[in-house]
Image (cartoon, rainbow, N blue to C red; front, side, top):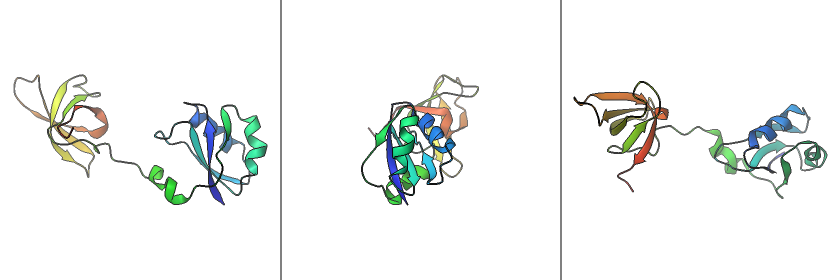
Length: 145
């Protein structure tokens, strides 16, 4: 059993993965279409020969990369990264959700355990710290750069 990379049309990775799994082939065990991997779907299968049968019938599937991948090469796709990764204290951010959507703020504190960031709004008359989830902000300017 190995992990194979199936070439796909750009932006069709999830569609191809869903179609491969929906075929219910006994030789195919799993399909993975990570957002960070463009134009490829990782498929766990018993052998390479199963793709000769099914890829002609799946639109947007363009073939299989020669050779197998190991679990070590794909396991970083399996664990989610925290939303606050890449954010540092002092960064300038924009709130992209919630009641302060569109406001700019400066990061004051980061709580990686809870995946939350405490920011101070720029436009506020009185500086009030606001705690938001890490997925509700976008970094505009980082002091680390």
